[in-house]
Each structure stands twice: as structure tokens, then as C-alpha cells.
Image (cartoon, rainbow, N blue to C red; front, side, top):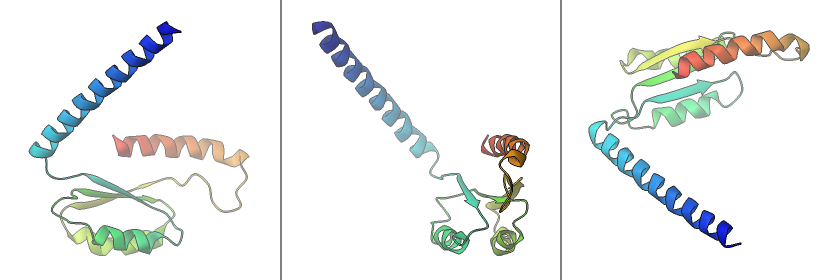
Length: 124
């Protein structure tokens, strides 16, 4: 029983030390880089306008550059983002949509793998 208590205490101390190290690195990074790179993923659903309103209310001097990721079949979101593309801190790219409405689960395996690969490329 005392072994588990000792192990628990060691884990807590280790966790606190890692938290302190992370916090100090985060503070140092904030001092050197006051901007936050932002990625916005838009879908073809009804929340696109809400997300765009939220993005437009962000402080542009802090949240830049801003990158929009849109499904390749979603032309309406592209049209809504185009007015924002005139600003120099905004870019966008498209990824393959995994599944269309009423598409069989069997038919989405390969498109899902392709979309996952494209998503990973966009994140890194």
C-alpha cells in the first residue's frame, strides 16, 4: 500500500513539474510571438455563417494568419470566404469530402483515408 502512495506522490510531483515547464515555455512563446495562427474548418451545414461572424469579430492583429479549410464539394462556403481573401492574412484550401448525403458506409473507406491524409497535410 505504501508503494502505491509513494508512486502517486511521485506522479503528482512529476505532473506539477511538467505543468510548470509547459507554462514557462508558453509564456516565453507568447512574449516572442504575440499572434496566434488560426485554422477554421467550414462545412456545408447551417453553421457556416455563425462561424464566419465569429471569425470576423476576432482581433485581426492577434489571430493571424488565418487559414480556412473547406470541403471540395462545398461551393457556397467558398463564396462566403472570398470577401475575406482580400485581406493579406487569410488563405484557404480544400480537402476531399469523406461522405456525401445518403452514401453507403462501404463506399466511404477510401475517400475517408484520402481526406485524412489531406487533413494531416493541412495541419502540418
